[in-house]
Length: 506
Image (cartoon, rainbow, N blue to C red):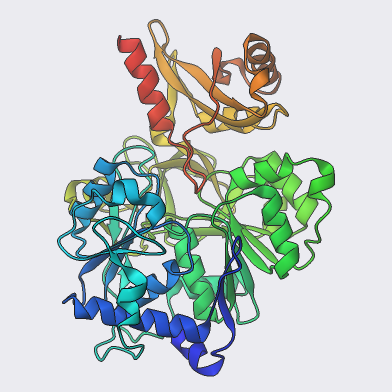
């Protein structure tokens, strides 16, 4: 389906609401604005296969701009709002973007970006940018004559290296062709015209963007938060009668650590499906969420590359705690370091054979390194299959610590430490050690900064040792006011590791 269908059938139905401001766009308004965007794209000479970029905070215009690009056969690249100037310019140059849409809140960087084409300021002024509102108002709201399907080209979050643009072939079918993600969303999560979907994450990331657009393919209503706040999130579920939502595990943790009187004051009975992904969820965190929200919590494991997809229902997960489910797209194969297939119960690098095609834009070497001629593609994660074909994640290969010849996967240690009542967030990684090669290091974001210090360090090390093998426990703990975590829940552990590696070198 496509939102133009619902614009014809139910033009007054609400398509988008911005939670913090109450700004609203109907399906008729979404159709008109996306058509004006398509006309603007054509007026500047862009054709099928060309690239436009968005460097925007969550706003009412974000999704309509994407739909305007989608119906123009355009490749649209949504960029992180956390990028520095060099990173943002790299993505614009690498993607070949010929048009840029930017938010005034990002003007300090956006104004210095070079694009071989027009730049539009959306929702306010940016020096050197054209006003988006005036530009689209001058365009007709009718459909362009040469509509065709475009698609996104999103850049990885760069948690283990420089961001990579992920691209696949442009779809050749009609605009209202059923997309694979919409089929999955309908089958697993019951996406339909009656749904009210709350999206609390940045729309530039793959899951929030793609699932929000799938809501419009279903004819549902999308509620967008500009920024996640745990108490506000719970209030919105009650206020709008939210039926569907998607979150990341760090949001679960922040909601669980709210005072009991705040957690229990909102009616969450409308919630049918709460999807989570993007980062591993500690078993105890998910168990507590199911105790609180009931059997509404669904999980999937996938990536921007889209070559594999696993899913697990709450009922299945309760029988196999910790699993991310069985594969629906691609055959899972677990390989050792010599590329030998491993039997159930043995952990190794995860590959998906027979999944969808993808490539890293302008980087054939990276594309080749992620793919095996026989076993398919890997996202760089480590895990194992059980006898029933359920996948369990261990960690990312890049994060493995080798201490005294023993392999330690820090995710397990993080899962324990984050449950301590005085911990808000935690990162565990290896740092250089003269004798052991590496030692286990933890950096903790305390709930109360006043607790940071030697006493809490000793308390947390003792807590870890009471729950884990000592080899997996940190030898020392440092404290940070805030960890470098992506808004989508992924931790930029590379930044922390590089800092400690540089200090050891000095």
